[in-house]
Every structure is written in structure tokens, then in C-alpha cells.
Length: 217
Image (tube, rainbow, N blue to C red; front, side, top):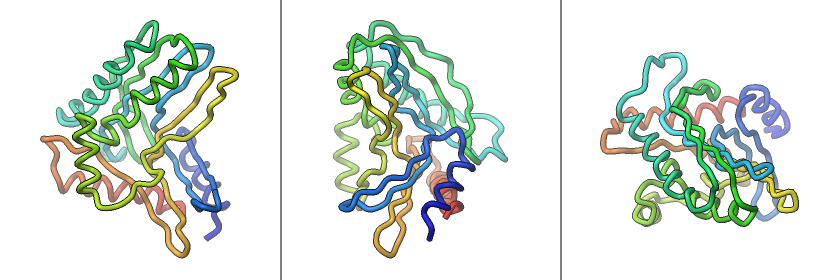
């Protein structure tokens, strides 16, 4: 497989996502296209998003109560963890955004931060959000470690640009990505589970997300 050709296809197919390809001799190659911004800071202006709920774009009609609740859990968590580190907060109403062949429910949360040190605190407080970890966080982390059965490695971590001198940051959650491991490729995807989830529907959601990465290989 030619990773350069695959990455060029990824860039062209998902213009609104954060597209990445990186290599380290002890880690190997990772490539992905993520729609989820973790944090953006420039000139003390701060922005993050609450992104949850997934539908295929071609058969989407409206959001269910389960999906709205799933997204609200993430929004509430972010707001609860921001108040001590920001001067002001502005929250949009949830709206629908496209990410390739999928649509998601999104809320933009913005405000003003005091300094780059506050930005570091925000990162530590926010990540991982319930969108990739679950809630409450400590119980969710324990459950994942005991039951998930594989090492996430860089999946659901964050990556992007960080400039401490200019007090700026532009970081994204590493979703929908692949890892090249010797003679095989691992595709990492996931979905949000709540008490109202339909297991079969959630399974097919992850299958469809995996096709996003598989289609560019």
C-alpha cells in the first residue's frame, strides 16, 4: 500500500476534517481524519466543541432523544470543567454538521482564557471527554481498562499544533484513524453507548465508520 496516495485520497475526500499522517521509528505510521476539535486558542480566545451522535448522511431525518441526550452529556461535562479556567463562556445551540458520509450533532463552546497555563489546565481537565471515555470519568476509565480488551494506543488521544511562545493551540481528538503495524493495518473507531442505545444499531455505526478509513486504503 502506498501511504502517500492513501493520504492524498483522505485529504480530498474529507476536506472539513483534520487530516493527519505521522511516523516515528518506535511507533510506526498513523493516519486519520477526525471531525472533533478538542481545543483552539488564539490571542486568548478559546474554542472547543461538543460532538456526539452519528447518522449516515443519506438516510438522516432527525435526531432521537438518545442522541440528543448523548450530546448533552458531553456539553455539560465540558461546561462543568471550564468555568475555573476561562473569563467568559458562550454556548451555541446544537446543530447538525457533515463529516464525509456521516452527520453529527455539534455545539460550539467559546470564551476568553487568562493565559497559556490556563490552556494547559483546560486540556488536563477536558481530556478525555465522555465522547471517548464515558461518564463519570473515573468509573468509565476503570471499566474500559478492565473490559475493552485492547490497547487504544493513540486512538482517542489528541494531536495538532501547540505554540507556547505565541500562546496558541489547535488540537483535535484522534478519531477514525489507522495504524500500520508491520504487515497489517489496524482501524480504530468507536461509538457512544447510553442506557437508550440499541446494540445492533451501535454495532453497524462502528462498521460504517470503519468503512470511512477502509475506503481510502
